[in-house]
Image (cartoon, rainbow, N blue to C red; front, side):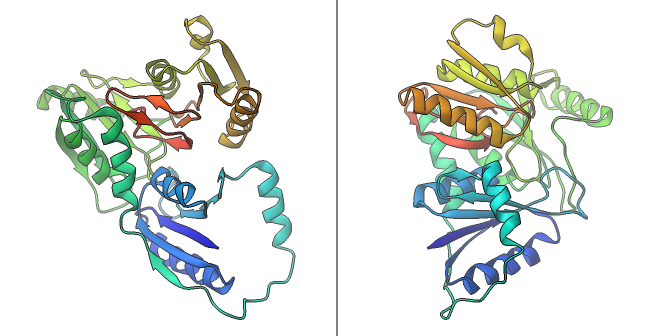
Length: 308
């Protein structure tokens, strides 16, 4: 009976989030306000609670546009869910007799960060200087905190109070040069960042050279011990030449298709080590993976912090 609501840092997002909260309450449901949090953090909170969620974000597109991402209690919506949503728009709506209450979940981001602290431990990044390209990502504080929690030294770069649309799949030459300059001038071992809502990673090496998302996804899957991979046809074909993957499924482009194929693989083998990723680097974990110091529970939504 609850819907979790989060938002990115666009100027319009707080206003739209308030509209969503009013609509949820008018439907007689509890509206759980998580504030400004990354999309995967919101998804983790709602999945753990067995509730739905709505993220107010335009992701990586320009600031004057915005949108909504929907989650049902089992995860991201499917293509069938999208069809049902569109059909529901044509039906008349009547508010519930008793409005739902409004609550808050201030610990949403902290639980998301704790997920990685418990799996990777306080020495995972020991001795490393990690640049965090903050810009206007809603994940910027969490990324810096994660570096510290895992034993590294965060170097915070280019924080902006004006929304900047960062597309991690189409990084412009000026940004690529800036990454190289930061790496050299600050003596960095890596630079990490994300798009506006924190579900697509951007990772650069010690020279500032970006690691493509579909390379990062393959490396993450191998590190975690995945044996079954699901990724769209747009991803790098290198996985076919990598040892250790018993099955590789290529899908149409879009996370709903990746999730559907992951669910099919898990239905066939519930104990399977199934993972998915997209060319943008967003990583979907379908099994309990062993980290350096602890287990990492499944999270079948695009995540940026895990591959970073």
